[in-house]
Image 1 (cartoon, one colour):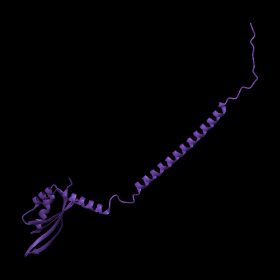
Image 2 (cartoon, helix red, strand yellow):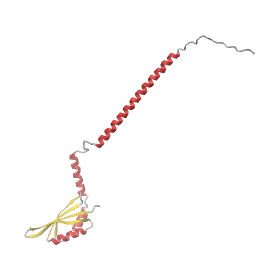
Image 3 (cartoon, helix red, strand yellow):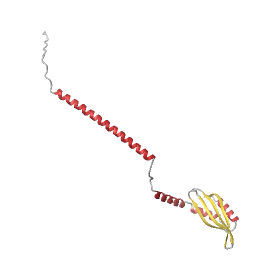
Image 4 (cartoon, rainbow, N blue to C red):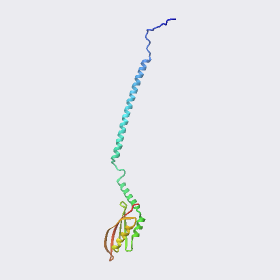
Length: 176
């Protein structure tokens, strides 16, 4: 068997021309990655600041509104329109039927004035005697539509030489 021989070459290997290019490319990649990370962090910080600013503006504007949503003139018109609607929603047919049903021969009604906000009526009229007024008040109180019926005022007046009783009755109508 033959011994193995070992040959050694003591000359230095030639330097590769790729090594400096690779090093430059690696450094350039590191610079680009660092720059990208810097700009991304800056962008995230700006986004957080903008979000915080918008959130504070929303909460500030929601909690302290400085200008009304409608003008004072529009609000007055809306209140007036709502008052008209409330008056129209009064159960007029039922009110008239109940008041007429409680009336008597010696009694004359002058006005029925509703207050839609408090659901009250003011009934004004004239009668020939106080007893007619009291009987009318009792009959109104017995009607199912009305509650808290009270004679609020009366006065004896003279018209055409006759003595008459002018009266006012307050009543509350039941809400439907």
